[in-house]
Length: 608
Image (tube, rainbow, N blue to C red):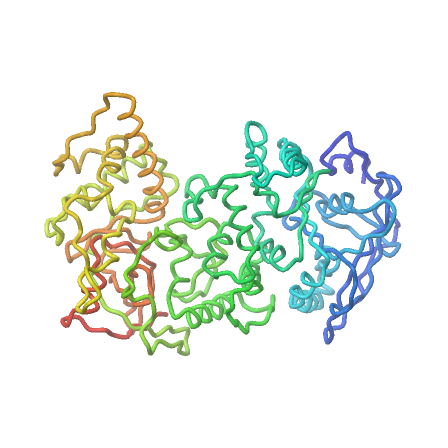
């Protein structure tokens, strides 16, 4: 490899880089025994000069021995840059370029540094001769990751070279640290822009990053020649609420994504729901990675699932989902990943595809921290649910209504204001206006405005705690009517205004009034886009409307299972079983009346 290539890999043309040393003899791994807790550690040689070649030796160690080593983590998988040789035990080992840069950064001048990094300390070379052996070693080593992380003195996180003015972020942190103020100054100007760019570094979107931070005693962030403690990196930032930081057209807000990661890794016990709020925005090079990472976090759930990367992905996803449902006595996990189409083959319909990244169509209450429920809301599954042979989930619930008509899906290509968006919205409005047997007293426009943002706040509370439980009356006019009006004037197609609208348009006279309308427009736009994208608008035979998964169709059943946050759309298969299409929002859904209705019976549904 040429000197120019090495300089390019360093990310800093004016920074000295190591010479590339080719020994002429390839390095081969000696297999690790599978019956004990053996691991490999890399003893990285010191470099008297920055231009010294990267050299080290692999030593065999035991997890339970008191070695003083650090874990080196970086995002090296899936990179297209050429591999770069280093010298290991006097032989040449081709390493991912990102690891080469990280080793260059962390080696010391005056003494060796003992580190563990999966790219080198686990045999990652796959060829036709040792494929099976490597699978076995990888499974054994991954089963020891908890001990490896917890046994290290610290975690070194390599984000990459200095780019996008990242040095400004670390300079700002250095200044705050020197002033020793209790409250550090927020990023401003170019440093603020740089911090947002830094939050988009790929390491923060690895499925493994949360487990590494959570299990390590301490963590240091390295970027170029700069560094800071992990817990310092968010001390100068403001962020959105956790349930608001993802937008289906713009992606996750990077700063809030980091804050969520920080909160996950500060607590010894975390909710699985919070893990998936973060990890659903992360990339996994292997579809099993997300679940392996989640099982290593301190959720309190005894999964009892071995780490085995030869296990069928669909079987792993099913076993994981079964454990989550059993431990939570709820169907929360079936709501977490919205309506994005599954890509893993042979999954039962009730098993989510955990490999999905940035799912769309997640309904508002799934990750909301502000939803207010009555204490009598049926959060738990009814007794008698079970998992039967043939990938069957047997569960009890009640029929609600049937889907009468569905409109087109609002997909990501339909950007607000475009012709595609207008065409879909026209179809939605037209379908809403055709609802002649509406069962609710509110105007169609009010119901439509609530439906687009999944507003069911009025459906979750009861009048008093004395049976029978009666839902509080829904107000005649929605509390988001003004917000919807502001949005409708910007994006509406005029169908609903022709049908009915008793509210006079808001006046635009005066700066304060214009600003108020703009606030309403921004608020409603965000709620509508985060709720409606990835879904279809529908009306029911019972006189209501809602938002369904994109594969829903006329004749599908709407069923409520106690233990779910929303009703589900089911489709009869013809053999006594049902396909679970996904969750849905149903306007004016009175769960308390449904479960106390003597004319409706609870029955068992077999989901396959």
